[in-house]
Length: 116
Image (cartoon, rainbow, N blue to C red):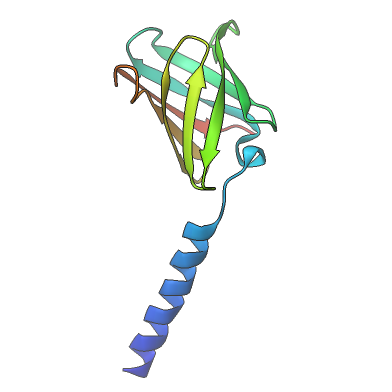
């Protein structure tokens, strides 16, 4: 019984530390590569974030698809907005980001992985 209690306590502290880890602009800084599915441009792309939460989304040929910015709310919730008028939710999971256009049509999804 004591062993099980120790495991539960350790799991609680581990989960609490993961949940309480606050995100910041540096968390996203760098190059992320993946693809976009849904409306508009479809295919491979690259997102390059600076350390001020701004980004440039690039097509596979290197042309800028759209610049934008992410916003971090309460240290854990992330949204994006870009110059093309799209807005949505960003879900970070390790070295993967999922961007879903939830506010302006819910019509595309981008999944990218950290490149550097």
